[in-house]
Length: 123
Length: 86
Length: 256
Image (cartoon, rainbow over all chains, first blue to last red; front, side):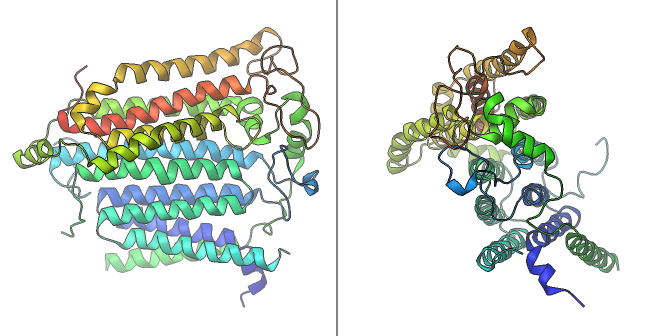
């Protein structure tokens, strides 16, 4: 029923799918605020890995010309997804720092880090 | 079709990444979960290097395993360390 | 019952993700390569840089980097503004934080004093050689910010407040952002915004690059080394400010 050859060939895409499912489970089902921030970080790492695995060419080398091996002349991986992933990693750091600052503020105001406590719009 | 030893590296790294992410979600001591996330970030940087992307591997190692762990540890210091089930 | 429904939805989501992952193109044979083939073929003669990824980030798709610099700036400003006037409510937390106002031990402080210049030099090397080897402004700035975070964490908060001034970090971040925009405006005189006007001319960093695989010449790159330096200053100041404002929370926020 399952074609095992495709599973071994496309294994990085499968890893991306499973990591995305773990991240979505953490964001929706956990109650501690810092666990939710960890879940958001797992989702972001899964998307970055997906971008890089889209651009891989089999048997090719890194897209840098300085002292590259002789076989890398016309045989390089796609460089555009790597440029997009560089931007995405820095933006992920910025979002995580802002979320943690907001979590510290919620703890100061309500006294607990539970998500169900901070539920009304004005307290 | 990709060669066998390359597929073996991908399988080993993929399984280790899934394991470390699952451990980080499951643990109740938040500081230990953050250390598991630092290990996940290191494995992700290694995977980026195997996929022939050295720029991205350097960025992920410096940002993911260095600065994000420090910011998490500082945030846990000002709130609670254990996750309480109510 | 609610928990059962949630578990079922999670397994359906997992099965959907795995099914979709196996329907993509085979791993290792991407279908369209035309745009990337143009970038790989023409990056050395138009941008005169050896590193194709950095030339895409700062020259061919420079607008995305402008957006990223804006997002980083906004996140730093938001973090500092949210944690500005901070007082803990219960007495026990305040007393615990006042007790935390001491240095780390002598071993940690000595090692951090030795390691910090080495990390700084390594970060500067990564920033300067961004157009030849893997690296660039963002990676080098993050490495130097890690060195600054090491120095901040190893000392007591009162000493850190005396040594590192927040005004210097603010000024450095603004200088980095304005310098990056100034280099982008240089191309406006000849062709368009973000055009590499210094490449293949006679100015500093303006040599030609020999085509194909070569040893790398530091004097090449056009506007790329300047942009790398400015973005490196901006990233290190921004991330250093985040770690600093999070560490000095115990003294009751910043008085400014």
